[in-house]
Amino acid sequence: MVDRRVEVVARLKALEDAAAPLVTFLQNANAVQELRADKQYNLQMLNDRYQIGPDQIKALYQYAKFQFECGNYSGAADYLYQYRALCTNSERSLSALWGKLAAEILMQNWDIALEELNRLKEIIDSKSFSSPLNQVQSRIWLMHWSLFIFFNHDNGRTQIIDLFNQDKYVTLTTKLKVSMFCY
Image (cartoon, rainbow, N blue to C red; front, side, top):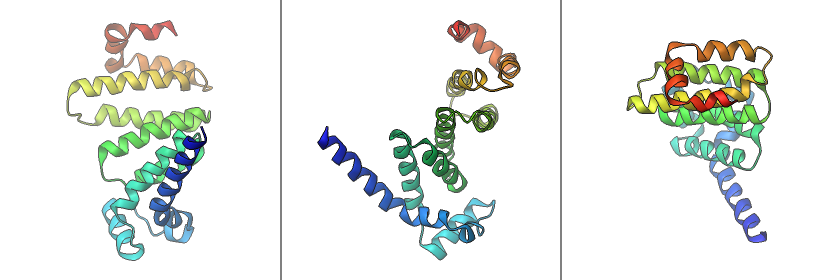
């Protein structure tokens, strides 16, 4: 067990070091104000002014993921939010959004979790997936994760009915995932 702890601490330190330039930037409120809605501009500005490139942005994702795995859900949620603002890879951005949703659920931040759930739903319903099966699987996962939120959020009872009665989701509940009705 001691060896495992040493290994985890070493990994944490390596990820902290790799993400440090970007984390330092994100902790500087004046510097963050320089960011715009245009991701390409932000990437260029970060590279030119702060020598922060794709490696540090990728390291931020890995650092956030490690924070989540260690139980620091608040830190993970913050870093994943920041990562999504800089990420140009749609698959990695979607993965970060799933991670942020999970972190908010685990912290029992039901209002924020509901916002993230709606953001995910919008992306899943509008995004063109590599295959229809991937989109269906994403919808099924969305429905499963939504149960945590809807069973705990003040308006959850009505929102679960609204979601599950939408055409795209009715088909899933009746044909693919009848096990969901067990809840």
